[in-house]
Every structure is written in C-alpha cells, then in structure tokens.
Length: 144
Image: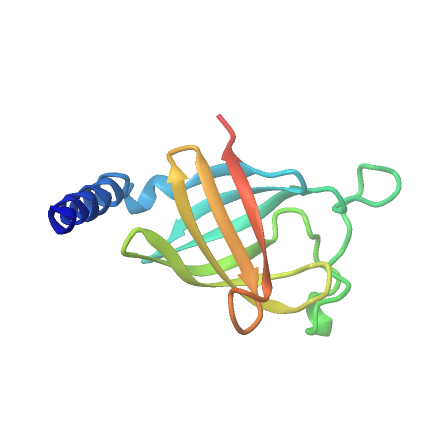
C-alpha cells in the first residue's frame, strides 16, 4: 500500500512539473529585480539580455550613463553601460535556460549564467564562476 501511494505521489509530482513547463519564448520581455532591469530577447537559437537600468548605472548627476571602464578590452572601456548586452548564449533545455554567459560591468569578468521561469511573470536566475553553488541568485518580476 505504501509503495502504491508513493508511486502515485511521484507520478503526480512529475505531471505537475511537466504541466508547469512554459514555452521557451516566454522568457522574452522586460524583467526587474531590486538592483537591475533587463530586456531579454531571442538571438538566433539562444536568448540574450541587455541592461536597461541598475542602481550603479549613472554618474553622480543621475543622468550620464557610466562607461564600461573595467572591461578587459581597452577599446570597449569608453562604451556606455546602459543598453549593453551583458547576458548571452542562454539555451532553453528541458524547462530551464542554461549555458549562458554574464558579463559583469562591476568587475569586467564573465560568469556562467542560468535561469528558470517559475511562473509566466517570475524568473529566477543564477550567475556563478565554476559551480552554481558559488554564485548569486536573483528573483525577477516581469514588467508589464
């Protein structure tokens, strides 16, 4: 009896996770968390995002966009941070977005990046170096 209850529970759990899987393009659009606002768009067979706003995006005057001064490529250090495509190569696989790359304007480093839509208007992402355990997560809400 316990085995059959467990089997039914496992079946329901797997059906629930399958039913919650959203279409890949559902990630496109504008998303915001406490510190950032991004726009996710499709780029060929992958997804990318450009930076629309961040708490540290502007100079002291509050209007002038900061430059990408920490970029390892000297030729790119004069470009504006605002509108910069900083997430690239996200691949939709089995209900998750994986294998992405995140360029951080704060330190000029590249990080691995992944994400998952929890609901149509809720996105969880994680940027990390090496293993996901050694990273930082963000919870995003879709901007209507």
